[in-house]
Image (cartoon, rainbow, N blue to C red; front, side, top):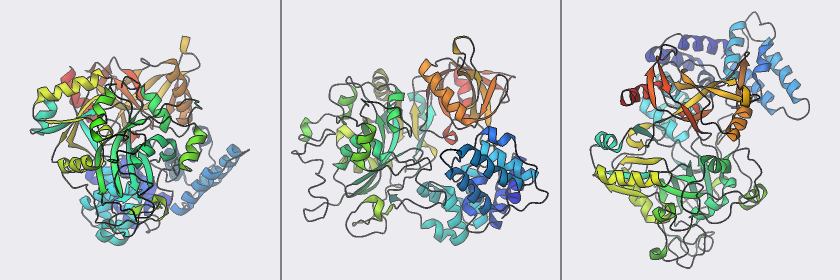
Length: 615
């Protein structure tokens, strides 16, 4: 397929606001793609690079050679060129990348150059979001959208799903199963302004869980091997040996857990979010005394809890059961159940953290858990290849290392479609209370408000009210989970930033904030703010936003819309100044959310929904 075909499709998709028309245009393009091109075509039409980043900044895109007269560039050629550019490193790498980019652009027509520039700059805003693209893949392959959505949930990437659908149809999609060692997209929570509103939506008895001010984590266990992934599906295992040790003692043969990681003070209150985030960051500031993280699990997605016998290789001695009173493992499993603290006691500061082993230095982390298999590319490479997960649904034999093509015995234990109350019962069977998120089941909003008040008093975000019947709908913000916070906040995307003046001269200061527009795939600006920014945050965002810059004028640096920031605000007001007709009142920065992608930011519809509450 020619890049010109993708450029035309992109223009057609951007030129219509109708969802059905977008799906039709995308599906027609996908039908023309060869099987080996489908994953790349999906990425490009979604405004993404399979390589994520290739080290090309806005400066390199300002001076391109004259365009070619006729289209000739193919999709595989462009993908190979981007891979080559991204691999360039060392002295002279900037000049070498510019030369390779110029050679590529010299073969592109004007329309192709425009498309490639917007693709590389992160400005391909055309409304081809995951939901629309999933429908387009279903239409192109003539399968039901639900089949594509479930495969996407289990695979975490639409590219391989498109390849399977277009090649093998429903059979190809159903070949995707939950695999230990390969992360899936986490289930997300909707929002409600109060406990009463949350219970009114669920209309039944519900679980009320603390919502911690930490990092979402997915924990995969197979035999003695543990892998930990973020909500963006990046692996962080080697950075968290204390968490690995805490979960390794659990009496499971294989499992996938959902939970939260957080740095706690001795009194049980959280450290600032930046302290927690620093432990999972790809690039970390050298710290001689890093703060250990505690882990609190709240869901189980797969479970094989078959007894581990003494003659099972690699398990009986190496992995003591959690109920073994003689175990001296950190994580709080060093006593009989009646003597162990609960998670609530830990969070109240009445007991020590469940991850008391000191966090290691960078070099110690690498030595204790092996080389981290994560990278900026996440768990899926540019070619869509998997990172040797374990197919827990079909494998047999003895547990081995997760990353080595391991196999497991026992019946499959996929719990995704199981009601929440049953998943929690499974969680309780294998996870001690100190490692479980504090939770109360009630139909009384007054009791739920007491749980909320205690969580907030201890410095946490609030609570999540969960239906007892809902399945685990990965990657979707359904009505089964509803978060309630004490203040109104939004996760917005930084669209641009203004240069500071006065005391802030030399820094990038005033942020332009946008909410996602699900119809166009772009962002709707809601206002600007520099309030809440400490000197530390100013320095950090100045460096980060310069990396994301795509163009500049006298006062403003425009950036790729990738950086998510949590904003507190006092109200929403009507404003003819902004395209959406509304603006935030007294917006202020709470923190950056490096654990979230721009696709997880709040939508303009969410902002409009809270406007009546706040006006």
